[in-house]
Structures are given as C-alpha cells and as structure tokens.
Image (cartoon, rainbow over all chains, first blue to last red; front, top):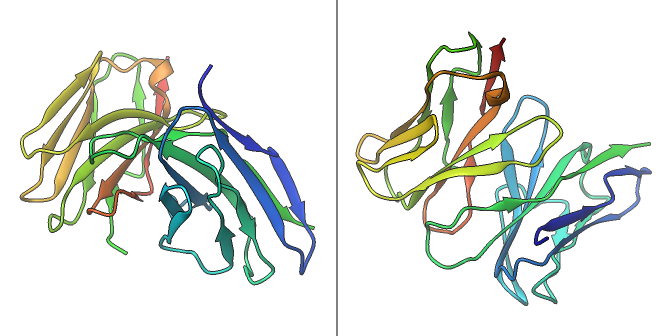
Length: 114
Length: 111
C-alpha cells in the first residue's frame, strides 16, 4: 500500500544530543512537510520542501534542520539548539501541483527528553 | 504567522444530533482551506480542500461551506455517530503551498 512511514514511533533524546526523525513516502509526491504538535495546540509547520534538493523554513524552524536528497525521503534533525524538543512530530506529503491537493500524513514520532 | 481560529474548542453531543464547527482565517491572500479529521491513535485524514468562495463540499453525512470574503468556513455533521468522535482540524494556505493549522475542535459523540 502507498503511504508515509515515520520512524521511530518513540524517541528519547539526551541533553545536548542531535536526533534525526525519518520520513519516507512511496506516493510519488513532490511536496513534503514537517509539523510539530504540543498539547492543546494545533500543528505548527517546521520545514517544507516542494521539490528535491530544495526546502523552505516554516513557522518554527529554529533548532531544526532538514535535507531532501531523494524524492521519497525528508528526514528532520532536531538539534541541541532546540531547547524544548519534547513534542509529537508529524510528516506529511502532497502531490505538490496546484492549491487543491490534500496532504497525507504519517503516524508520527513522539520525542521526549531523558 | 497568520492565525487560523477554530471554535468551539470541544463539543459533546448525543448520537443522532447534528452539529457544526467554525473555522476563521485571514481573508487576504487566500488560496485554499483544508479540513482534516484526526482520530485518536491514527494519522490525520483529509476531508475537504476548498478554493473558491461559495464552495460547498459533501462527503456522506459531513459537509463544509466556504466564505473567502469574510474569512470563515463551517463544517457540518448530520446525525452524529460515535465513530465521528475525533478532532477536526482546519488549515489555510496563503499561497506558499504550506498550511497554517487551527488548534482543532474535539468532538465526542455519546452513544
């Protein structure tokens, strides 16, 4: 089945450590997105990519980095500069053409600080 | 960051009741309005994407309307069922092909 796979489901980070969240899609979508959810809040956009080898900062990009070397993959690194990384992270993709395309979401990764 | 606001924050209804939620968004630079349903332990699922003022979309017992001039959208559920229990998210695209989400309306339908 086509879809988006996020791994791991749960991740623990030590202070001062960088961690990378994986997001892979086999939907042949051009666009991919990373969101963060905190309790009681909506999804906030971290980074997005409309095409391979290009990406843009979202609304809360500080302390995060991404790469888009392959169409299928959009990994998110939570760096030690992100002072409050505990949250639920969702990856999404869309075909990318036009403005009437819905986004498809993965199952998420929950990141906690040890 | 442009604010997308949803109300109410949560809603409890009885099975068979009809209900509606509101999403308000900045009407300037409007490109699209999305609605998603997010059930517990699952990933968000797209319901509707609307782009034109006056758009009305329907999927089974769920429908949505859009007013881009005044910046609001309504989501209606007719005859709520327990399986409709979920958080309903709306999100606005202002032309960057990326979404700004509201904080959602959490619906609980009691059998």
